[in-house]
Image 1: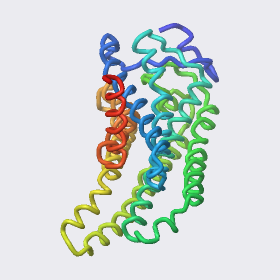
Image 2: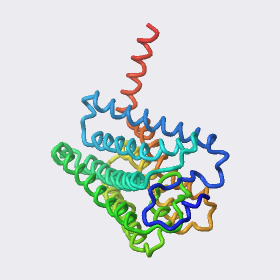
Image 3: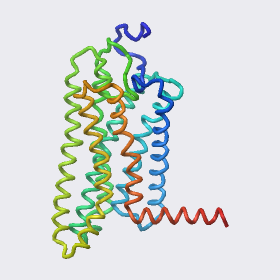
Image 4: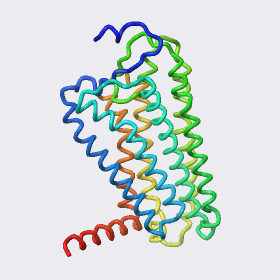
Length: 319
């Protein structure tokens, strides 16, 4: 490594992102599935935003939250994918110190926002199933806007200490990050100081995102299941629970990889480095890719509207 990478310094001007350590020769091939995933993220989430905007019947709280989720997924994936692909394709490994902190902030901010949106969607399902006649009067547009603002504000505040704490540490080990993006744990581990406060804060945010949010989601679904089991017929129970299918699928696709990646980064020191890096990217890329697929296929209104648009365009092309 160059001498500048190991010389003592207080604040490096740049960091070096290694990509996937141990698999450098396969970077071009690895980029193919990541590029395909990014294309699905862009096309799928833009399609949802377009359909909800064009279809007046979808101007409801559930679809407003779904649009928030689509925007969040677009920002989250775009914050890391372009740089990742530049590493894979052009070996462009340098990232400015401030750009690294901004990337770190965006990743943690929008991950927290996404988690909050799932809580809001669980609330929407609870009101729709447990209080169907009052759904429109309870979840008014003004309340949806307020909930959205609270979610964004919470995510913004929770993520703020990450770059602030990271900036204050002295870095005298190396400026090489064995990651594809500026992961908080990977950057903090380069500091030559007692960084326990950063680790403790990371665990606190993790407990908020996974512990507290999952608690409220679970509480909502306990009430939902009680309401479903009180329905008179089996068909009614299956049909009502089916309306929650897409939401449950998206929740599992988000929280399971997030929990696994967080635990792996902190306690999976015996795992191969390339496996840890791969997992840390899966939790950021797979949910944004799966969400439009899950909601597009499972949500009848969106699926029907998409088929109408595709059929209409296909008819115009061949007419």
